[in-house]
Length: 368
Image (cartoon, rainbow, N blue to C red; front, side, top):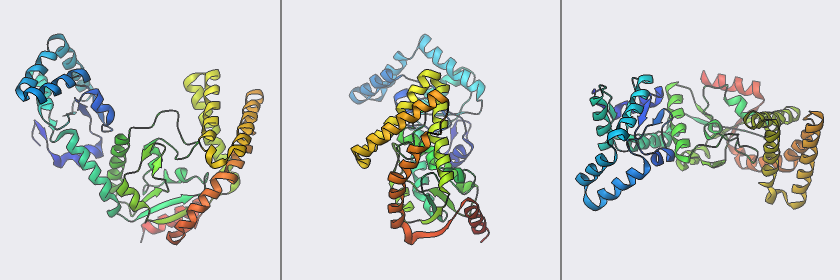
């Protein structure tokens, strides 16, 4: 590898090792999509980039470069170089990256060289690496046999998957549990960042040399994150594993996920009083999100039960009353919907069992 250029042949290793990347694109570009190991330290801010871009279209490259130098000079230039030097002190092996691996990378590289540091930039920049990751996603179903882990709501599919090295956790990448009650306290990634992280996790899976790829049974949308179409199409024809679980365990698992974890998370972020209010709104809004499917009367019944459970929780410091609406939610909404979906997949089901049996089946498959 050149001291000045990181070739395209290094893309895989960059992603597998999550090599630190100093991304000098403007914030507006970075926020639309970036790589997991990237840090945004822009050469130009959004307004400066816009002016230079307009100048390039109207007057050509030479005039645009001249304008860029006039906008980023003196103290402004020094502050940006100082920020780069501070980052590189903490990440001495970092690579430079701009959109195409062109002028911005080369100029940043020169400024750093003037400051006494030699930092290579990535050939092709963000655009080429992004295309590489798209190709990884499209090709992943061809790399290994793929199984889809299905199971009724509360059966613990995610709990099971995180214990398996054959698995890639789509919900973890999307930062959403894939249902009306599935959001986390923190926001979901942008669509591009979801895809970039998915590709990186698929590369890591391939690097582990597993016997198969196991994915959770998901809709096309996980919250607001859309599974790439080619990848999702492959999922729809994959063989299916069905995870069984007792009703009691399902109820307790959803009580933990929807009530205990969400309440404690809001309180941790917002404080006791504001956290409880935010938690209450989360439950109410989640039910309202499926009002059309429930119907007005059943929706109102849910809201009444949830309000009662929240009052009991606040007055007695007990969450047991929440089990009433959780049980009703499963019997009236999730279970019928799951059974309808499973019936359509029945011809693709190759194994059905509880957590222990499923672990044993996959362990046995790995030895074949």
